[in-house]
Image (tube, rainbow, N blue to C red; front, top):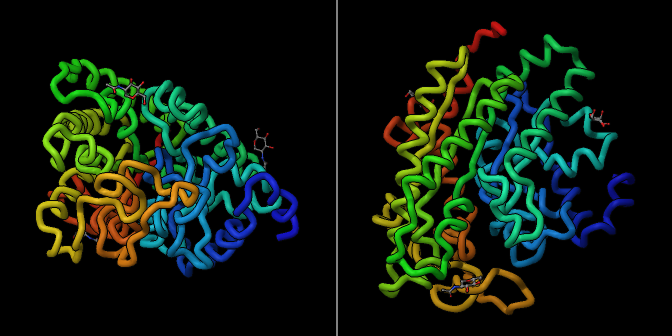
Length: 379
Ligand SMILES: *[C@@H]1O[C@H](CO)[C@@H](O)[C@H](O)[C@H]1NC(C)=O
Ligand SMILES: *[C@@H]1O[C@H](CO)[C@@H](O)[C@H](O)[C@H]1NC(C)=O
Ligand SMILES: *[C@@H]1O[C@H](CO)[C@@H](O)[C@H](O)[C@H]1NC(C)=O
């Protein structure tokens, strides 16, 4: 802890945040799988806290209100997010720490590296430019992959190239990204009637995604747990701006659905070409829609407005204490925490489905099966 204390000045709530991480690592009896996480705010556990110039961050209250001591950690949630929930199903207390945290703590780096690393950065997209203008600074997916290459180098130094290849082939690579690329294509305040050239955009996006996944494969990744794009047109921010008051923005939802269809096709093709590549594709679109269509079945009372925020659907303004947001008391009854992100409870339901669900929602196999699958290391 003494090393951590020295750095605490960089970012207000950091000290307590580090304390949470140290609680988070209680070793599991039978060596849990190493988990690497890449993506955006859906799985960011504090990367952007280390980017002082970034406007896309959640290291302020009421974020984290349901974590021990109500400490904001950078997660866009009242508590844990999907990255944490999946990691916990594999035997951890929560997600591995952010890469930018780890490199600033070399003393614990070597101990932690075998459990995994989280590279995800809120606001980031598949395209390099996504989020850069609006948020000034994010870590785009290609840079996250570069950071993973560094980690691979560190692992190789630690245990040698053969053992590293073995560890990476068995590791779970969770990737959750794409929403921000769609938001750049259809800004929240744009008219729904514009012709957005959607097919071309999705094709280019998938072409770029393909390149990223192939880079990860070349670096040694074999098991990909991919989360698709949820019905982002139904999040409170978008409902608030919809032409038909309160309705989901169908243009964005259609894009999310096309994205899933082309991603499914891409992954099928990739895995038939790349020796040893295995994947699970989580249909987060359908998972979320099932909840929106039948909230009570899942224990939700409100699937339209944000728990924390203000304005229409409580989702027009961010969940930020300086803006005097409303904060709901019954967090587990809300699908949305803020204008864009799910509550801790909603992320938990998603993680349970990804981990152990049937092929309708996670295909061709669930994450637990993916991790149990044997992969031959041939090259
Ligand atoms: C990890 O590798 C990078 C690049 O080679 C190096 O700069 C860094 O010091 C290494 N970190 C540790 C903890 O070994
Ligand atoms: C939408 O918002 C952006 C930036 O927030 C602004 O530049 C643009 O003028 C807005 N467009 C409309 C149609 O209101
Ligand atoms: C995962 O999928 C398999 C095969 O579809 C199924 O038998 C199993 O019950 C699912 N859940 C878990 C936790 O393995």
